[in-house]
Image (cartoon, rainbow, N blue to C red; front, side, top):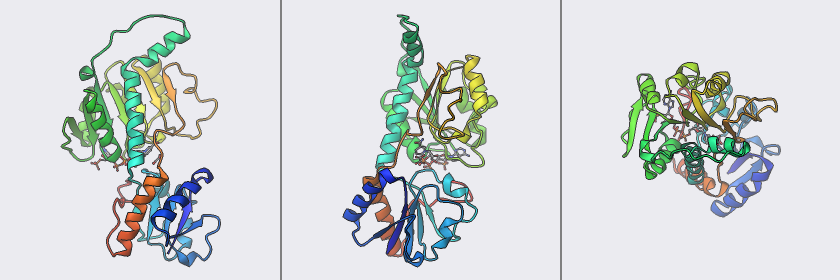
Length: 309
Ligand code: NDP
Ligand code: OXD
């Protein structure tokens, strides 16, 4: 039983260590040295070249190293009938909630304004707003958005979520579907975008939807860069409709050196690190699924490629 691994070199060793402990009978093969392609039954990958997975005729499951599967869904030549499994693992979830909580608190506590004041050597207090009066809205109330919502509720924020289907999550006001979007945006002071990239969510943060946010709102973009129309976001920041933005994902990554976001006084830029899959805990999730498949059960967290997530 062999698994082909395509990851960055730095993280390769931790995957090897984790699988050796959890499932010593699983043979790991490197992407560039697959050996006999017929041996490969599982693939654990990030962004394979288009059509490349077709060379493994006995593939039983494709595991995405990340929660997002847009790097796979964009390949029209995936092997037909092989389930694609997204990454759901506690390390990735915890990391995202840390990043979202940190960023919400940053905007809530006026750190964009205080960073500007520091650069201008200005000592000025801004009146604090209690968390219960700050309306946080999370687009995408799935595994990651749901956990982040729970953590934000713990700070006392007024939290809402927007998803495709209605949710009943204690403490979180649910909006759903296209009809729920504008009412959701109208009540959101700090917006977190944690949607998967699909045909429906591409360009979803644009001039019209940003205008539906109250004046002074902040945007935290941690889903995918193509969900944001960057010129529209810049215009909303420059007109002071938005007070600030934390941007972790971009239309072009790495962010080009001449992007206006780098030096924008109201923007925090991070290099797509809001959360990372942790090999140690993620290998447990992959091994659990391999054991399920070997026992004739369907794997957990299979994505619907037609739906896009
Ligand atoms: P899930 O599949 O668990 O959740 C997706 C959520 O988005 C669901 O609530 C779903 O609604 C909602 N959704 C999808 N399409 C629509 C739509 N058209 N309208 C309204 N809501 C919609 O995904 P995860 O929470 O695991 O991951 C979310 C995304 O986060 C990933 O796809 C990835 O792009 C991004 N990510 C970014 C990282 C980073 O470092 N920046 C790290 C990890 C992930 P419903 O519940 O009704 O199906
Ligand atoms: C993911 C990511 O999808 O890191 O997991 O972006």
